[in-house]
Length: 285
Image (cartoon, rainbow, N blue to C red; front, side):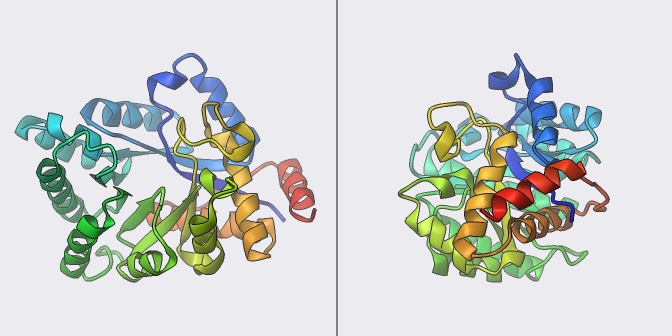
């Protein structure tokens, strides 16, 4: 059996990777990754994600404005993002959402930019990657309204997007799932205090789960204090498999297929057979 991984959220276009980006991509492939989604947080980083996707066949881009950067968006910037969203290398509008934890942009500005980008995603018929940190009470009504307008799915039947770095409980995860979203499980599921996320990873149907690193942020437990990178995704997948009492191959293959399905990409990638054997052995331990 071949086993493949897909990192549904990374930022390897960022400056933290300027010294060894080629090595990061190579290590990801060596670790069994057959793809990763690189997300923008503003116009400049979205353009960098697109440039990277144009040169690497297993990297896919997303264009969007992170809530931290909403205060810097003017009409010209929003228009530029709208044009970037039409680029064929862009599979998702993101990273977008609300962040009431750091509050780096005023709440009303975050909401305005979020709604503009939800409208944009509908216009270009592409899914969204949603960030919600200590903001679900405010975020959920906008997601519900957008889901109703979209009929719960994109025009081609795909889910509407993914809840990135999910930090809510099981019932909230189910609610987002019913609205047409995947739930992304991050490397923090490996942390000793990951009780709520561990419950979500264990109890949700596997067909609504994605996995991510959010590189360079939030490394797995074994790498705490270090820069995260896509090659470390395996640790999250192994932990999810343990929590669910399922084989690592099933978790890896299903979440990878889910990612391809969300992005609307033909799934033809195959990993090295020797890597699959190594993961099977670890999953059996």
